[in-house]
Length: 303
Image 1 (cartoon, rainbow, N blue to C red):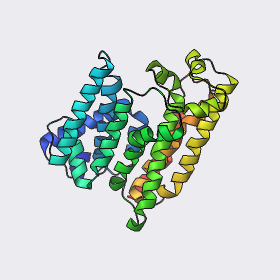
Image 2: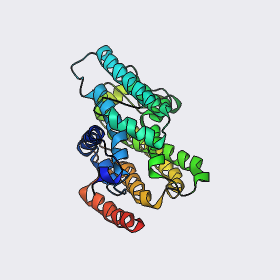
Image 3: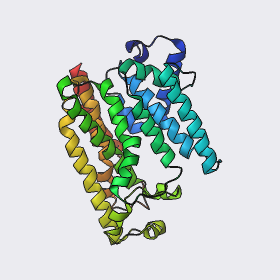
Image 4: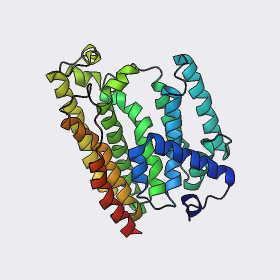
């Protein structure tokens, strides 16, 4: 039985939408896609739907409309976002990504607030090029990352419903840790897009300015600033660990692997001696195997 059938997805149009979302996940989220392999087949399509929605919105901002002006991109994103939110409210969509998303929202009764927050963060990317404090940045990462974890939680399931709020806290922290790890790795790529996602006040405390980052030369000051950002990733990852243990056994190995691989990006930054302007820190095939094989065995055993 394939994943869609295992999940009880029978409508042909909706099945095609889930397949499209899976393609986006496999193409653009290789580490994330690997982690979903450790979920039971009946849960995977819904995770692909959430990823498909997030990735498609991200592509509107950064890829699909690269030839458009910022105002034109904003209009494309706004129009698409409004249509998806309206589809969620009415419970049906004709959009190739929206069909699967709406189906997932209905099945798991996901709050529309999460999707509004995500779209708001995507729109922030079109107008905001830097954040003064972490508090300012948090508004962005809540919508772009924390809500992804919160959306996934009902799909993953928890062992004890009375501890759902505790699991939500962990999901939020882990989602943010993933995003912050990406920010550290992608400083150069984000500069290419005119953005800095490291809080300016924290950079300033290490005597780092935006102009220094623009030169793309690693200095002791930049290295020191990166170390502070890495400490936050690891702190959030640690805070999320107890929440992962609250997840359904069939979902736990997936998130443990995702935590290890995504947050492990900062380990790779250290391995290249913080040379983020020269190299792209990425998880090695060996580490994926080292994490993936035990996770697969745990996932299989839990079923």
